[in-house]
Picture (spheres, rainbow, N blue to C red):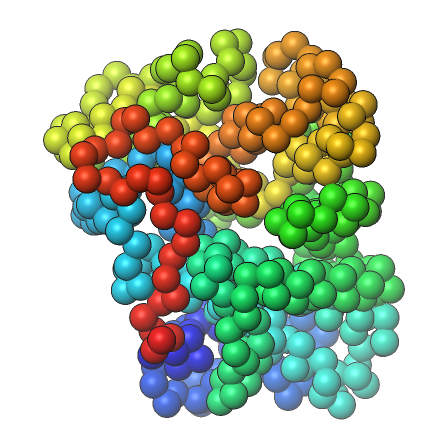
Length: 438
């Protein structure tokens, strides 16, 4: 079943005045009697509901995506007795097109894309253009294209060279699969047009990210430019982002959680010393192996893991024993970073290491100072340094597998603690989900 045939999307339930997501089964209408679509026009009361709903939908199955990326990058093992596939399939490198490891985040991200497309469609309606000014419509369009670009990039990061569909606005006439490089270009185009619109129209309400939508747009654009190997593009985007050389490493854009009302709790929060019902165990060489290339004593970024008081039995039996819990999120309402100042500084250093060695060192040293480490000397920032700092600064945030792949160094991921039979090196991409019928 293709993504157009079964997909969650954002709609407005006018009677109750709330937003929600639903699953569409084969042949079910997007405009069924239980919902009223906004595609034929958007009202002012509906706009904040739609925006809040899209931001909420971005969080759906985010935890699956983060855990999958982290396991593949050998940042941590995810233990789940209810689904041993985390060890027998994912950690083993057996990436199936039928597994939930790809299907759940794939479907969730395209659901948000669908919501953005419905919002964009509503902007073409005469009733919408009568209610909203041209600048307001530009702001809404900029928001929708920015979020759409982020979601498409998330899918592309999983399937890599297998490519993605970027044109899914018409479920009866889906666009073709684009190659990795072409899809990056398309995503950057969405970000650039979105930034132009946001510059014209300003921010949209509500905004719970923590930075303006235009700053978020440019931060994601810098990430995309880095994937493209476009250093000038990275620096240009960062100039209009929230990057601050003297700022807090943790400032940036976040997913928010709470125990209030119909909101949800942080699904990545796992209590310390959890057993086989759910645990995230740091890959041993993150902290235990001083001889490993990526280790530096005194680094306070090591506080992202905490020594366990016991080992879960199933983990040991599976051959994946570790002594440290992942402890990035220390409460069930802790926010989850989408993109932070620390990543932007590291992108700046990466983009500047050839053209501006002093600037690259300044950015690296801002990160290292915050980590309690001594500075590096100008001219010594190279690919190895970037990989080293990114591993510790962005631990558990879904970057290491992508980073090692884009630098052509998947074979450098330490698999010394893997089990006999696990694939080495780790695979580079997921297959296109079976639901696409390919």
